[in-house]
Image 1: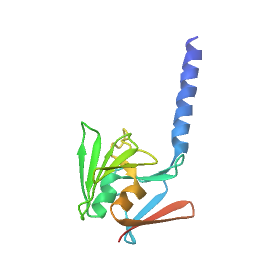
Image 2: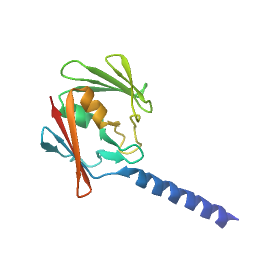
Image 3: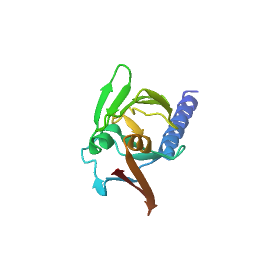
Length: 152
C-alpha cells in the first residue's frame, strides 16, 4: 500500500513538473533602442514567453529602469507601481488582470506574477512598454524570440 501511494505521488509530481516546463519558453533576447540588455546577476529572473497566452513576461525593474521609469513595490498589497518619465502611472496587482493607467482600469490578457524563485515581479512586456510610450517589435529567429523596445 505504501509503495502504491508513493508511486502515485511521484507520478503527480512529475506531471506537474512537466506541465510547468511546457508552459514557458526561456529563449528571449530583449533590446532597448537596438541595444541588447543582459541580465547578468545570478538568480535574476529571465524573460520568458507563457505559451498558453503567447505573452512575453519580463522582470518589472528590467523594463522600467531601461525606459527611465521609477518602480515601487507594495508588499502588503502585492502591487507594483511604475511612473514613467512623462508622469504616466501604471498600477498592477499580482494575480489581477485589471491594471490602472492614470487611475483608469485596463484589462490585461494575463496577470502579473510573483514566482517563488527568483521572487521578482514578472509583468507582460508589451503592455507595460506600450503604456509607457514605447514601441515593441518582435521576431523569431532560430527559435529565439527577439524583442526590441524603442522609446518614441
